[in-house]
Length: 312
Image (cartoon, rainbow, N blue to C red):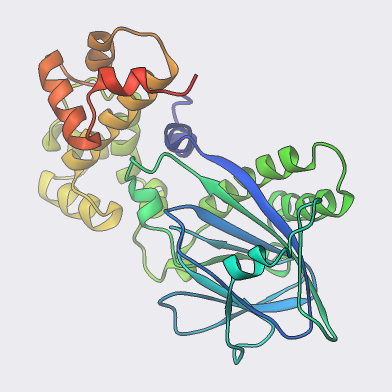
C-alpha cells in the first residue's frame, strides 16, 4: 500500500462495490418509504426538481434540491417525499404494481411537479465491522453549492448526472464506479460540522499523532505491537494515547489492531493463493492454530472453509 494512504487500504479491504437500483420519474404528490436493507450505503441524486428526505430515527427532514446527492449509510430505513406531511407508501408495493419499466425507470404519482432521482447503493463486506463505517452520520448530503472549493467533488456529481441523462450503453457500469468515487470523496471531506464533534475515524486520520499509529498498524500488522510501542510511534504517553485513540476511533488500540489483522487475513484468503500459515504470519500470528481460532471466532467460519467458499 501507499505508505500514507490508509483510507484506500480500508476501502480495498472492505471490498467496496456499487450498483444502481433505478432512475425515478415522480410526479405530483408522493411519499415513498424505503425499508431497512442490511448495511448497504444508499444514494439518491436529485437530477431534476426537489424533494424531502428523512432517515429513520432522525427528527428533522432534509430538503434536497437539484444536483444534491444524499448518502444514507448502514441500510437505514428512509422516506422520500414531495412534502413531509404525506403518508408514505412502501416502495415494495410500488414496484410490485409494475412501476419500473424495462429501461430501469420507476414512474410514480400523478399531478403537477416532477422529481427525477438516480438511486443506487454501495455494498461492502458486512462481516468486517470497521470503525469507519460505524462513525458515519445518519445522512451525508453533498450539495454543489457547498463544493466551490472542491472541484473534484463537483465534477464527480456533474458527471453522475450527465451519465444518467445520457442513458447510453455501459451507463450502469460507469455510474456504479462513479458512486464508489463520490462515496470515498464524501467520507474524505467529512468535517466537524457534519459529525458534530472531533471524533470518528476520519478525525483520527487527520490527527498528527493518531495517524502515525494507524499507519504503523496498516503498514506492519505482522509486528508484535503493544500499546506502549504504538504510543511511542504516535509520540504520546501510553495513557494519553490509549485514551485518545479509544475516544476518537471508537475502539481501543489493540482491539483495532486485532480486527485489522483479521480483516487483512480475510482479504488475503479471498484474493491470493498464499498458504494459510503464511497469511497468518503476515497478519501477526506466529501460531496457525491461534490464527484459526481467532478467525473463526470473528467470522463464524475457519480460514480454510472461508477460502473454499470464496467467489471465483
